[in-house]
Amino acid sequence: MATFTIKPATSTTPKQVIIIGAEDMLSPSEVVRIVGVSLKTLRKWRELRINLAFCECDRSAKYPASAINEYLAATFCSVIIKKA
Image (cartoon, rainbow, N blue to C red; front, side, top):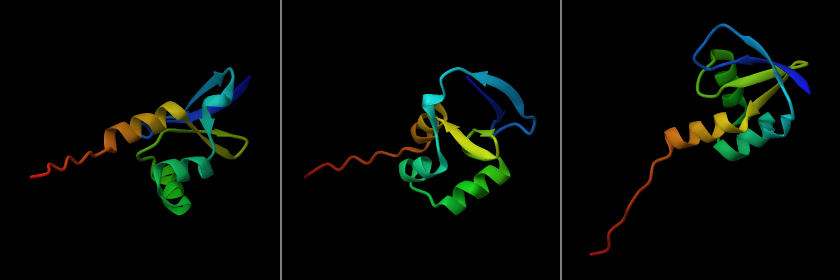
């Protein structure tokens, strides 16, 4: 069981919650590979509290997998190419 402080991207008020089984939490390096942005960009988003919700645990940022899925679903663009 771990205690995290959640800082949603859309809110400036952090909320403390207890998460049982933190296996669905991703490290910044994992998020960088999945989302396709640099670590510097991810840090800036955290600082500005935009795009991705994250949690802090002992000065370490963790990202809920569900937040990453929601971000990717919201920003995904599909292209359909029709052959003539």
